[in-house]
View 1: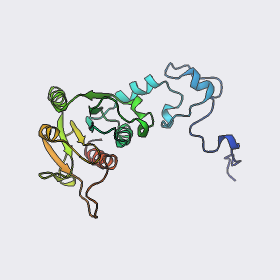
View 2 (view 1 turned 90 degrees about the vertical axis):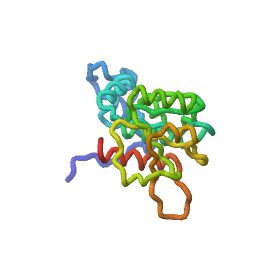
View 3 (view 1 turned 135 degrees about the vertical axis):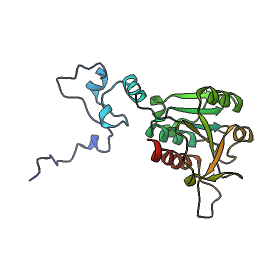
View 4 (view 1 turned 180 degrees about the horizontal axis):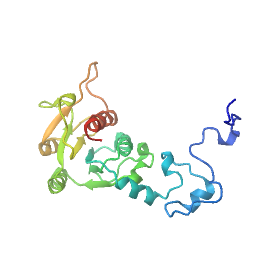
Length: 211
């Protein structure tokens, strides 16, 4: 017989993400947040970070950030930006870069941007200048003429995957700033896949070699 208590949770807790109040005695490590210990932690974080302060989680993630950066153009308040940011959090990238408008649609990020370093660049020139100074190779991801299949290349360890806005894709000035263009091979009738899906595929491809 199992020792697990299989009694159904109370109705008010069904479908609730996270954990309830921490049993006493509480941990004394200053990484823990007294308010979360008292009230419970309903955030979408992995178990090792339960009850930790936001600042403590970010500091711990900073010790293992990868060499990968991700950038996306923000011209049309694209909902996909939030999805890209959320995936970037899952891969613990070094930074996320928003090109164009400073304000972006955070809805799809589900607050994961709080655990990342998000940078803004007003235009392609400013973005290219950052990449040169940081010694980061810019790789455009779009099915444009001159792009090579993503699966055929080994991406640099220190690189930034650059995605265009949904619909128009990468602008000419950003393409010019990129050292290489890669495309995700497709087998159906649609011309393209959305930026959120493309970002997840490209980040996973990078991670197979470097994560």
